[in-house]
Length: 565
Image (cartoon, rainbow, N blue to C red; front, side, top):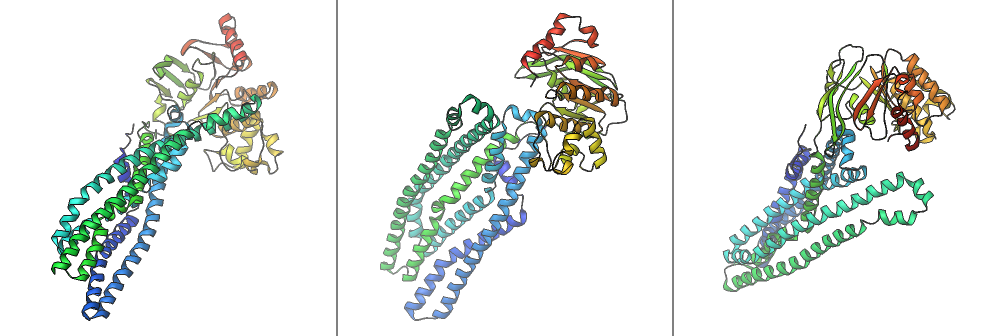
């Protein structure tokens, strides 16, 4: 299991993703800070040179050089900011996506797909600004400190006047950072809720239309909008408060410092040029407070990193990488318990699936059939006990030993050929067509506009046809164990019988575990494993078990309830 990073650690790791861009950004910011600090001094020198009729050409040249250096650094910093943002955001998205996919179906138990999408897209982009926002803040801080030092060098009384008035400004700044970070976290959370609800509505759009509840569904999807509005207005209120409070405080500090500087000119302690420089340096010293955008960006970055850290903190099972030695394909469950919210959905299960046999798994809805199927290939992890394939724990085995066909398969890839060969991208056309033929899919695929090369987006298919493509994908893998989780539930009786014949005759010798609610499918299996409330009720042949009324009732119940989801 891996342990997720804290918000601060995640931001630090993000900032290190592009060392070259980071170095350029820091260097450009540092030089720009020096140029900013040199500008008032250069301006003061030029002013004194004009008033004293001194060497104005040299003073003007120095002033122009400082301005040019500042402009060049600004351009370089903009380019470096884009590069670091791109690298940081890309790394964050890869990290989060890797964790989500590695957790598999377990990831959906806490974070629904809409929430994950929001974090992956929006929160990653927000957190990607960590480096440039931090550099802006630190450069602003360094420039502010430099401005205070310069004021001290001109006249220590000017620096003292600044230091007396500035702490209030810093307190306002600290409150602003805390407020914006909290508000933006709430803003993004409410946005994610809308995305999640919209995904649910689109997935069930036929039900919504059939029920005539479009208006009600719109209200349900937009219900979190009040939260978005409240958080947005709260953020704007914090920015507005920072703007007017900062303006008043800046003006107050300006008046205090310039009043002392003016007194110094009158007393002959400083020159007119130094007075002008003092005006510039007090602006630089206050620059940290004026950087509302940088502090807002830092608050957003922390909020985004906090949401990503919640995802990354989820435990990720160690991936198996053991090459499975040659074997017949025997599957064993030893004292397996799986819990969901403290409830055992499989309870101390002991079951042996003989190598090369077809075993049907039956039971009422909620009996644990899909959980059992998921255990075989490591899609579900046991809380207690072990699942073995030819004596090796399935959690230690790399991919490829177990192939799955699901009740509602998702077709991945660009074309129909890609969908069937998914997981084995180099698979040749002959093998793909053979798998499709066995799954009774070849005929309708050939009728598509481009046959196997038809893009999935241009290949309208019924639920049964999609199931057959999913079954073909599983058959094409050539895995040692084949698991069918209600993979023929949408097929008509004739097609299902044809596929069952393939599974029992052509695939004889390969281990097959078939989750089913059809008695005809169970009858064709070598053995039936009957689950009841997470426990193994009985193992035997369908014909022998059929004599029991409670076994027959299982199929009557599933016929009434539908296939197990």
